Length: 374
Image (cartoon, rainbow, N blue to C red; front, side):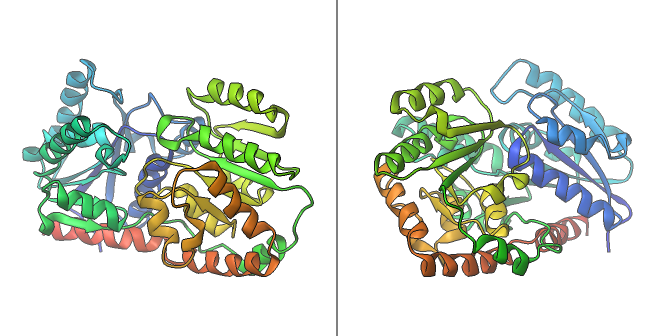
């Protein structure tokens, strides 16, 4: 049962999976009777989420511009959010999501009865960051995270990182992201998936930015084509690296094999893919992998916190040992060229999906709110 005297403020400057998480959390808490208000930055919200947000009670949402990088506008954002907290009636719990909201929320700790922070992947987990930069990131991340009453990580490795940088273990929780799987019909999906199409289709889902490493995806497609396979690709997402990707695809002679679909919801395109190739340099627990599992879509991935959490226990061979196009291409073809192996993958993907439900995610976060409210 919700605490009727307590309001939850969800604070986020984010896009992609973070916005999916915040919206699902808002909807779930509202259905359970909580007072919930979202404070969101409008600067990076994708159109698909804008449409969804427009369906909610406008009194439940305040838009405060927040830039992803440090900016003088952060002072105005801080002032606006502090004013929102002062106007809130009764007890207030602040739950900040992602880096910028985490930084601002840390300064507002004294204005609420409880504060939580979900990093959705600390920047310091990037294995490619230079040593001095990594040391600086770890110091900054500890400084703004340490005063939160709870730091909610979404994968075991992210929780280990938080503890390693000095976050009090008593404040740490690991609560994975979740999907609404109540209407997922695995038998129906299996019947669709077991029929292979003639032409191999690789899928990529994610923002076209450094973190997602989309250039590696282009190299994987090129390598599979080089080995004589008539493969093509669907790319869902947009971002500053698109032009570079197009140039690289032209260099390899595979530009005509790519269907660029932009920043649309992935769910409608997943059934057209035979395998999704996840190339991120670092992640916490990406929704794209959970969505792929729910569609029983085989995943081949680089190693990061998210892919390790989702695949390591049941599908360890689907994780490449290095971010190498040759190795990833070989794993893709080993799945697609062995029908028995592919069928076993479908069964295991359904098992994995059941570990990541929205209901479980909200139950566990709600328990933390209740503990802080009391």
